[in-house]
Image 1: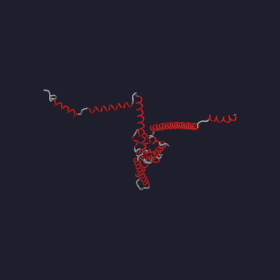
Image 2 (image 1 turned 180 degrees about the vertical axis):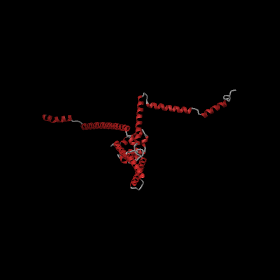
Image 3 (image 1 turned 30 degrees about the vertical axis):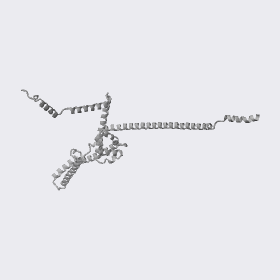
Image 4 (image 1 turned 135 degrees about the vertical axis):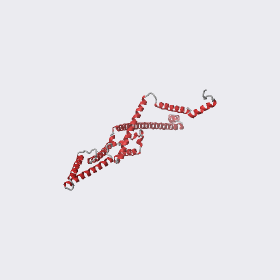
Length: 316
């Protein structure tokens, strides 16, 4: 009996502990599916957090770029305003070459110099001829006196009102010096940044700066080839005209800013003011349309006279 009991005990326990085959196979599958779902959710949350992090980093990067661009824009505006302010301190007399000798002045001085040489040479010839007894002594004396006076007028500079040899030379020297000073002044003014093309935005306040000759000079200023192309007086004159028009544009900018500040200091809306002005203009136009013309007045008066002829009849 003991042996039978010992043998049957495992069988009984095995029967009691045994589970259905379907249930045993179902639990691992459910656990694996739940585990897969948890892993997928974790991955999704991680991906979502990574996307949020990347989006935040991109937003911060865009903010920094915008701040840097705004700071660079403010710096450029401040630098451009400083360049605009320099227009008021330019040497416009030098840019305009007011003291520059004209071709007519040079021609007059050169002709006077030639006549002076001819007169002096003729007087000296007559004086030497009188010494050699080729002419009379009184002719030689007069010629010698004339030669002495001519030499004094040139040497002492007495012929300032009548250009002579030193007048022509001084004009040539003055012309070269003014050209050199003008080119040096423009070189210092343009510098490395190109002064002319940096102030070209003033064209929105002065439309004359949009002329083709000014565009050409501004482009050369941007390409740093302006000084190499300023070869004629027409080019330097165009440069001076540009600076004059740029100064007018800067003054217009200052005037507009003053007007804007004045409007902002008031207690009304400038947009509302414009609307009211437009409404008033419309009302005036309607009133003008509604006013009868002279022909309509004549027509009305004739119709009234036809209806009542005694109305306009003269009283006896």
